[in-house]
View (cartoon, rainbow, N blue to C red):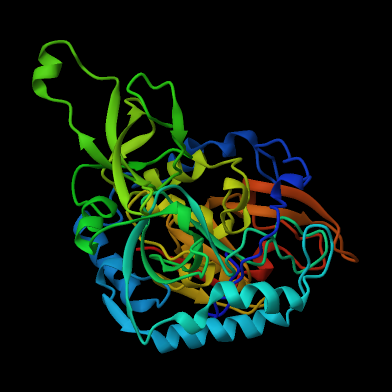
Amino acid sequence: MLKRWPSFVFALFFLILPLTVAAEELPELPKGPLLLTSTTPEQLKADYWIKRLPNADVPVKTPEELKYFNQEILNMLPDRVDVFKMPEARKGKPVRDQLEFEFKTLRHRILYDVEDNRIPESLFDEQIGPVSAWENVPGQISVIWGAAVRPTSVRALPTEIKMLEQIGDVEFDQLQFTLIKLWTPVGIYHISSDGQWYYIQAPYSRGWVRARDIAIFDSREELKKFAKPVFDFFVVTGESIPVFSDPELKNEIQRPTMGTILPLAEIETAKERLEGKARNYHVIWLPERGTDNQVTLKKAYIDGKADVSKGYLPFTQRNIINQAFKLLGARYGWGGMYNGRDCSGFTHDVFLSLGVEMPRDSKQQSLIGTQLGHFKKYENAEEKTAAIRAGLPGITLFKMPLHMMLYLGEVDGKFYIIHSTWAERISKDSDEKNRINQVVVSDLSLNGNSYLGSLFDRIIAINELN
């Protein structure tokens, strides 16, 4: 689950303090893939689930149908924004009022740093206000267009300092909204007084990003040619792939993750192939931020055998399940922290690699497609079971409070899912837990021995992406 403030709450904060991330001592990631509940080793393979499907290769939606589906998502959900259809200018007062409200709201929250100290209100008064400079937002904002030059965090406050709701809860930074990918297009509404942070609108999130991670384009039209190409692009279909600065593929410079768009810079010619000069690499465009903050396009290289697709993968059950299992064992990361994926980040990346423009928040993910049922926790067991059985594996999502899961199928009366989860609670009397912290396969009895109840007990919505 991507935890976030209400849609009108985005706060700002910049602290001139040393970064604390390097000093953290995170618990070791449990070695995976893990066998949980009644899961068997063969069920940790995508083919086990695909072979059970009668129509695994039939498109759920054609490219044209997917186009309309994405438009439905855009029209329905306020957090899903088409950056290329945003107004080029907007009134500044709503942004100014919003930023001031965020400042005042967060100033009074009880939050802790990674050294267990409470964040003092004086930091807001002495450093946040002058740097955020909401009073400098003009009456009319001319939106500046840019793209991410690398994956970068979208933050509630313009700082890399973590703020924790509970002492020691270092893996759950309350300021982390999400991680946007390389080439993500953004509209810039406001710049911090020190120029180090941009307040941006991205396709599925709004907040503060580091200015050094965004390159500015002269126009939105120029940005669109590269950040939303119609033809001649690759989409990353592996968990991540290396990008190199040289055609010899020796100097790795980035590692974009599943769902990232990579615009093609050069196409291998028929003459090269006929002359026996076939390439073992693809040439793509990378954006770089120049000294004047403007974009510089540089050619970069990916292995010809890299796990990428020319255009989006067909939207089939086989491809969805295959994509999901490529992430089996991948690290859990709240809002994309530690280059990981939380529950909705997992489903977002899987479907994004097939061209489904998913919202990022689990609540909004549960609203798209066909609604198969809405339930109260711990109730409606028969109706819930019927709704699960009505859903197609691979395209059906189960929503819990603060959690999202992808349905794989039913075996011997048990319903199986693949999901990114942090821990399994195991006690009726306390919050004792086993740390999982990765993408796993389990059935819906997980957590059933805890005071919270099983995953099945706590499902509140089921929807099918068709």
